Image (cartoon, rainbow, N blue to C red; front, side):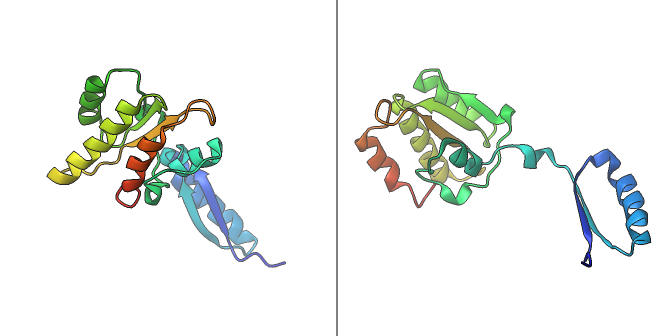
Length: 157
């Protein structure tokens, strides 16, 4: 079997030039071209929303066009505060923050949707935040009424 070429993935950025040089010369001896060397970007090691869908065996309620948006652990915030404090955090923290709240915190979900609408109306920096609503099927679920409100935004978010 003839090898068309080699692509080396997840190379430490500080070893990129060295790896490219050494592997390129070594593979050349075997008549195999080095097609590329891809540096390890921590970004790719952080979970995307699609990874959370697979992990939790669930589908996003809205915003599915953003399912490949990545969030670092530092980008994640567990919401345990009152709505007012949450809205302040939502406006002060970096736009790309992943918030997690319990399904019983419908005030937080409504506040998140309202902030999205506010930012959409005034323009400015993009709204890259995401909200993961945590619960348990049959025990802690968002209400049908709230689900209906979220469904209105399915195509927008």
